[in-house]
Length: 62
Ligand code: SF4
Image (cartoon, rainbow, N blue to C red; front, side, top):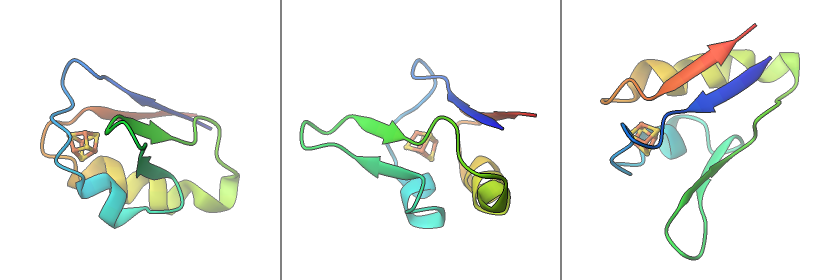
């Protein structure tokens, strides 16, 4: 599984950070950082983050 974030769409609202704090966070410089290749057991969290993103910037590849 791979998580992709389209940073041109991302508006840094942070809903993904709230929904999946193990996978998404803000770096000290304010940029969004995320786990690009999470374990299979984290799929549900990744899907929740993608669902709540208001910009639909998160895609999950099998
Ligand atoms: S929820 Fe979407 S728009 Fe907001 S920070 Fe996360 S990826 Fe970016």
